[in-house]
Image (cartoon, rainbow, N blue to C red; front, side):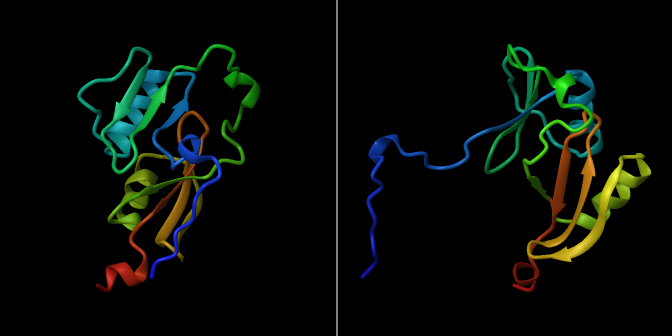
Amino acid sequence: MPVTTTNPAGASAVTGCDFIALQVQDLEQAASFYRDVLGLVPAPASPPGAVVFDTAPIPFAVREPLPGVDLAAAAPRPGVGVALWLATADADGLHQRLRAADVPIVAPPSDGPFGRMFSFTDPQGYLLTVHGSAPEAAAR
């Protein structure tokens, strides 16, 4: 018999991550990087001041800073302390493409708990980690 638990917060409980957006100083540069270098496909529509990409299972976007956000104060590394992982079918191939595009690689490809992985910084200074399939998933 399955064990069920009741969240004391009830209907007001957070159920998970639903949307990820990076606030950027240069929206066009950031959108171009994620579209042209990483290969993300823009969604059919985006709100003003943002570019949303058609990613699954969670939508990803770059957007102009919200009022009161001073990205210059976070330079040179906005988002320090946040881990953003992106999935790919070919981590080594993507690593080679990013190196060829002179993208700063922070950690070279290695085997990790989620398969092949490496880290890089985007043009805005955000640190991102890319991972491929976990070894056991690839063996299936």
